[in-house]
Length: 231
Picture 1: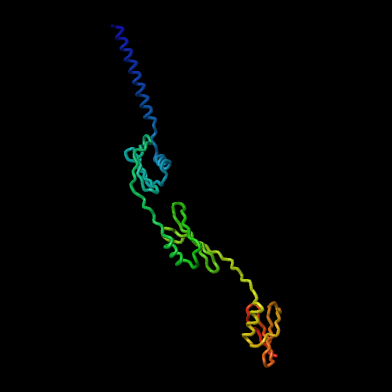
Picture 2: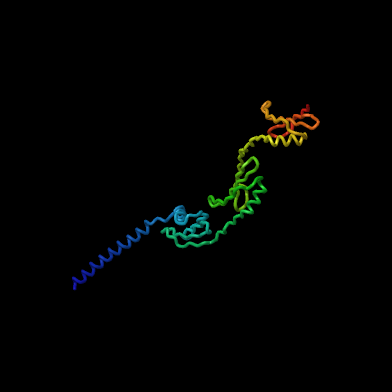
């Protein structure tokens, strides 16, 4: 009987020791757990959801982080002690931004800049939408960038066009004869093609019925009658 009591006492002592060890370990773990900071709470949100942090507050050991995405504005609750995400709620739906139509944009461009619209392209950059336009005038080429939502001109750049020089071509002998006969009636007696001071001329002799003869000098490029000499 005495031995039984001794065993019970021994088991009781062992149980108390084990319980003490367990309680101490639990207390040690809870005491060593470091609460997360505000910056760590923000980083947790940006790493997990991305978006733009708008506001962070701490209430009753719970971080309330407000952040914005393209789909709307969200409220996420994070336990300060454990860093666990407790809840996430969308508190505002982001309205889709309206873009101007091509016809609307063309009217704005025509009011802002002279020239014919050669191209008009829609482009997205850093969550913004733009129209890139190229216009051509008589001597210039213009590149414009406009905000697709407001129509505001963001940038304008002009370049001078290389105007192709027209190659001067001379009139034909038959055309020169026609001009001469329109100037003086009669019969063509002789035709010469000569150069004077870098300019080319047709010299056409026309004989009339009264034996009078006219020499008509015609510019070979313009077809202009320069001189009429009678003989």
